[in-house]
Length: 394
Picture 1 (tube, rainbow, N blue to C red):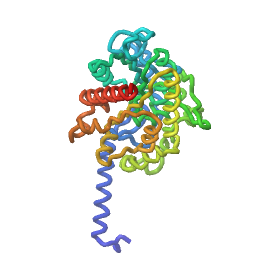
Picture 2 (cartoon, rainbow, N blue to C red):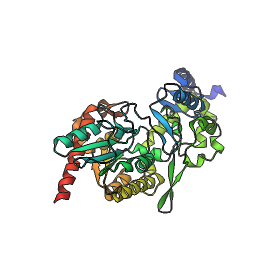
Picture 3 (tube, rainbow, N blue to C red):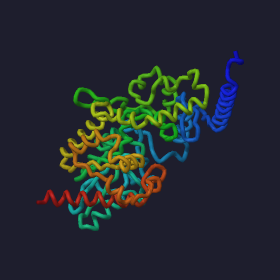
């Protein structure tokens, strides 16, 4: 049989096989395996994924360690800041001064911010500081109460407004909108979305019900129960609530035993990420409907309390890169709907101008804005509120 094969083809086939074997060996050599058996090639996760049981045990042990962590388990929100740490005041949120009194000062505008780490920023250089300073410098005396929390979805931001923020009687309520939060809205265990997040807590989430919302997984289980929940996740009650658990992603098959084939699969999925993003943000899809309903409910409650309500669009690095190339965002249907229903402070044009043609990677650190962008956002937020105040006074 081999005699019938042209020598050139035989040599090519042998060379190809040798190349594949070398590549397979190289990928295996460079692959890392964590305590749960999950594989990673540099920053790329390979399938089959592994349920992060031991990772959760590690993170929970760190949480219960004597020094503790900067966040605490919160059965209503999933987790919340530990009061008095990382710039948070004794009431568990961030202000430039000491914890304010519940009663508003008659000569200061009280502004409350809600969202994730893009809203929280940092105690020293978050955009909220620039925002507050710019308004005060322009004669609009104000105090900013920052209720942003790292890792939050829009659902948790809304629940934090409902439970914690409303009682401080803000006159202006701002929800920071970062599109990644829509993925968190359909997630109940952050470790399934991001095994390296260090957040071992379960979170509540909403599901659509008729024209409204229904809260599920609330109160959330005690963190000590998380490893056991993970071990039986496939047959447990949370599986139907979790967008990021697909059985096939956690199963071995014949070709996934090749690390090279698994890497090719992962890279092909990255190539198709844009089309999957468009599907995820379909106007009639669960993610978009949840986001719109959460914002709608929060706006209704804020305005019902006498406050003005705004949405601040806080685009991430890849969002800005796509916007620069195409003038659009993968989540444009949702963004358009938010702008149709709410007063949205759009920050993308100002950030693009501030970048001045530089790579956006140079203006982000660890996935978040660097100081220049914090300053620009603060200035734009202050300008938008001054314009709104002048318009309302006419």
